[in-house]
Image (cartoon, rainbow, N blue to C red):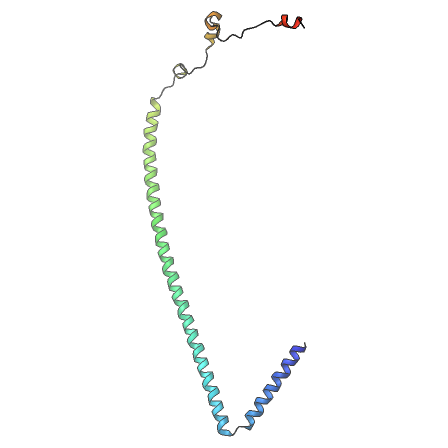
Length: 154
């Protein structure tokens, strides 16, 4: 609050001092001061208008560039869409021709269960019925030993 009061008093004193100095000037200097102030105000106004025109031109150029890019992008998308549609149509006709050929080939295939499972390594039921002597070679047997004599001596 104290800073605001001090600034207000300073601004008031400065304004009063400038007004007092202006009142002490003679009429020729007052007129010169008014002309200089108007000239500076006109220059500032002209500069502000120029910058407004520059900004307007820049925005207009940006709009033109964006419009051109959008048209270019639309053209590219339309070209890609057309190419995709053409490929899809040709793919559909190619698939239809391939499906007809595949149907023809499917009609010719006949699967017989005996032929399919003939040599696959799965044991057959007839193997279990064969004599045990054909299957027992003696190589797979585990020898059995009697260690009961060793336990009695203890």
